[in-house]
Length: 388
Image (cartoon, rainbow, N blue to C red; front, side, top):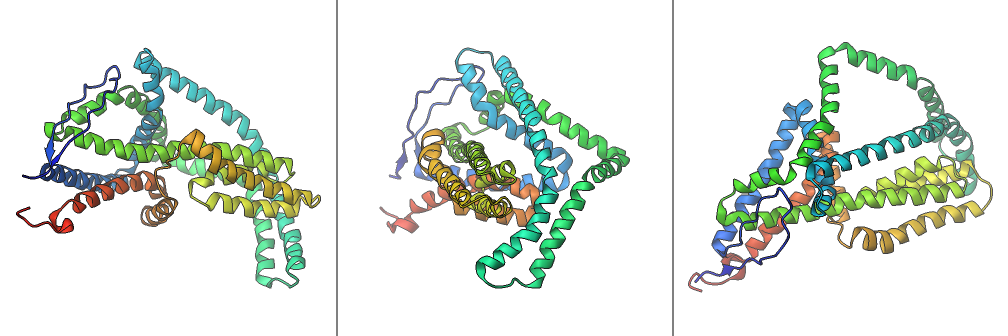
């Protein structure tokens, strides 16, 4: 008799407006394998379809994907409010209003800060080209190649010209873009429709998931729902977790570098903090930029201790406090998987591929795990005879 896969029943409250869960059924190993393989094939095919739609109908597909991403990110908040007895429409409205106010407040605060930092860029690069190279030469005790001297000088000049021409260049870009009326209108509509679509997707999230579940064969509902829950666990752990880690690290790095009186402290802190979403990249770039800023704003050896202490404390807090206690032990994806996914999809699909690299990697991780699990239960793997 073939082995039977027993599904574990869990008693969870059903959110208002959500579809009642279908009771778990017992599946034979053959049935479960067939369902899992079909689910894996559909997921891989769906990913291919998404990239095809982005290539052909990018103007329409991108706003829809952005809206779905927003609904996915904010759904736990609305669901939490809904479980406390608040109407889902009202909960969605409150989340959107709070998010909008937070975004507007952050923009109003950060624009002047980054504007002031941007005004420092010409002087920053100019001093970098004239002061950093001699100090590096003095440190290593040898002259750097003329090519490096020439390129750093050119970089300083180009940065100054870039900042000075940023306003007129932006105006020319907008004017040229607006000249193509159809493209301009489509872009404006695409940007405007994202929050509208996100609101309705978020409001109807349980109903949409219920409709999808209703289309599944009845005997496969429980197993397929469990597979999607695994994808959600991996994806949400990484996306929500890394956004939280990035925000906290940005504050820590910016505050520490500001105490050390390092030039461009806020910009470097934000780059290092959110760059941490790509493992090791944010920290490495942050340390490199901090060393350049240290050479330009040298006031004494105490600054070296502040910079080193900032990154050491930041990494220790991330490893022992932020991730385990605030985000959770599981981060969903291994660092090497994230790096490979971003490099591969960025090379294949450009900037859109970079944006989709993490969710695609999360889905493929679960698909691969499911396929391997099913293979390890086959007679080919276990070596059991057909009569066993």
